[in-house]
Image 1 (cartoon, one colour):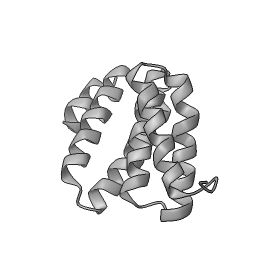
Image 2 (tube, rainbow, N blue to C red; image 1 turned 90 degrees about the vertical axis):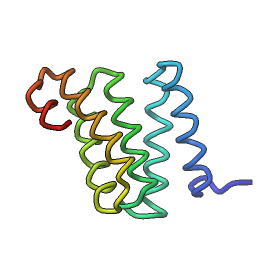
Image 3 (cartoon, rainbow, N blue to C red; image 1 turned 180 degrees about the horizontal axis):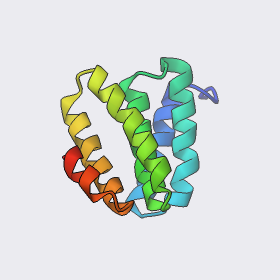
Image 4 (cartoon, rainbow, N blue to C red; image 1 turned 90 degrees about the horizontal axis):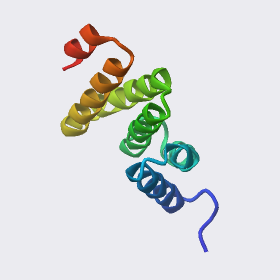
Length: 115
């Protein structure tokens, strides 16, 4: 039996959120991703790869819900962690996500600068 806030449950929540994103069910994905983020922050702290992955996914979910400002905020938080930890490939993916969000917000010049 898993403890209600164990790290394995955090990973499982993120995987469920990812599955909902694949089928474009962002509303259902949101609660699972937020739970994963809470668990990972509690066990690992704020500046870890796991938390950054949760935040990047949360950005995708918010974007799918047309909450682009929230999406951009989560994306920027994930980018700062990826950058500080030297996760270059993850940082690049997050930058591409950010440019897509900026385009959705009509921030075309910023999107070009991001890329």
